[in-house]
Amino acid sequence: MNTPQTGILLPLPPLARYLTFLIDEAERAAGCLRALAEVADGERTVVGLGHSLLSALGGDISGLRPFPNLAGVGLELPATPAAIWLWLRGDDRGELLQRSRRIAEVLAPAFRLDGTLDAFVYDGGRDLTGYEDGTENPAGDAATAAAIVGAEQPLLAGSSFVAVQRWRHDLGRFEQMPSAERDHCIGRRRCDNEEIDDAPESAHVKRTAQESFTPPAFVLRRSMPWAEGPHGGLMFVAFATSFEPFEAQLRRMVGIEDGIVDALFRFSQPQSGAYFWCPAMRSGRLDLSPLRLR
Image 1 (cartoon, helix red, strand yellow):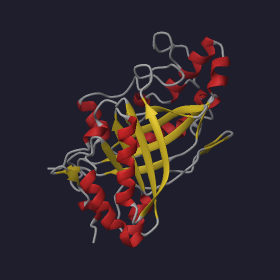
Image 2 (cartoon, one colour; image 1 turned 135 degrees about the vertical axis):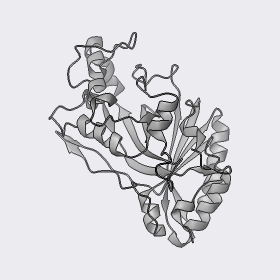
Image 3 (cartoon, rainbow, N blue to C red; image 1 turned 180 degrees about the vertical axis):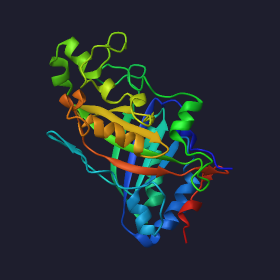
């Protein structure tokens, strides 16, 4: 019986490291994936596979596609595809470094490390802006229903689709705003996390209210703050049973529906965007059987 990669549903770890790989030697990719399946446990190391990799392998996962090219008023969202995405979860920076090195060695015959970013839990689960993150996240069975493909799709049961964006905050600009203006950008009060009923329609909470879409656009967010030199932001990570819920929210954020752009863009910009499929686990290993590797 297939089960999800358990790291998807577990609470956030204190520390994390994200790795992305590009494919260099397609003919060696299948062997490297099998080797990765031996070392990635799905809990401390969550694995996502990109559309470019499946194309190189001649495989197909229904629902996996490239990140969309979306643009709004004064906005153009970047698409930065990768062959493999890894979310390394832990509580020791040194161990995360050593684990990432071992994984890079396993993948080296076919894949090239393209990006590394370290992340962390800040102030009990807040974004670097000081606002609580993931307040409307589904929990328990609702989280599983939102994030994990069910038995109605036997070939993909237990797997998940994940959207990943690295957002960079202009914290200086944000802190220069009056506190009420900051609250109206988010749609919640920073002091107590209460939603503001009369917040403007551009407020992030109103733009992305999951139950306000038809059908509802529920995703399971597992985002974490990042910092690098003087810069910082949020690594946005959203798991779902398809990309439709995420895309519905993103299209509304950039104003495609009604011309109203999410106020989040006043102080934060996405620097990357990519889609991945996260295989299920079977007998403690990544189940690569849907790929029909030769």
